[in-house]
Length: 96
Image 1: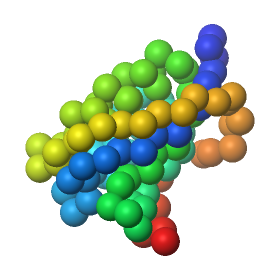
Image 2: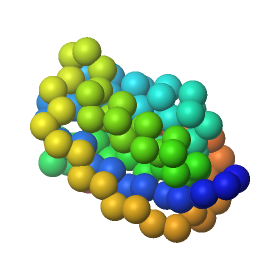
Image 3: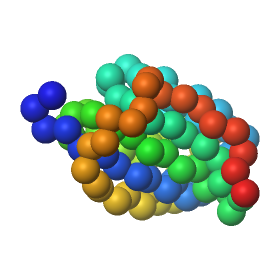
């Protein structure tokens, strides 16, 4: 891996009940990224992903548009060091 990194993204808008987590998982897996997506109690979706920095930037671009039924208002991102802690990309269930 040339430029490994991690990103934590919180997606705001109409992003729950519109298959956003599955959309994020498909896009992330297709980009060779690992991590997870889950709904949060405040109506946002949390995405944690790791892999090549350029692929992570592509994922963020996908998150900014979302699936057809979503209305993304904004995506707040925080970059960090790659940890290698995830195997694959998963959809997690509701978290309070």
